[in-house]
Image (tube, rainbow, N blue to C red; front, side, top):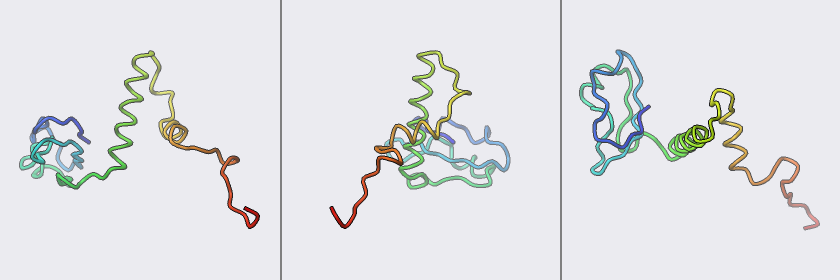
Length: 106
């Protein structure tokens, strides 16, 4: 998975035969981070740009990048963290016991 934002930074010859290439990068003019022609010859699947990666994978990627930067700043070991639980905890307004329920009385 590539999300660098630099025009064709990843060269096609660097792609392993049969690899799956997900290019989430965006550059002006909708040009990808991966050198498409040579990469497509080697990859088994390659995502289109634009339109190959939706907003949710991009949001999760950005969230994990931010968590990695924060962990590095405070010297925390990333191998001991649970990114799925941390993402859920940061983006959930209510715990299971606090969810407001609609009833006939309300």
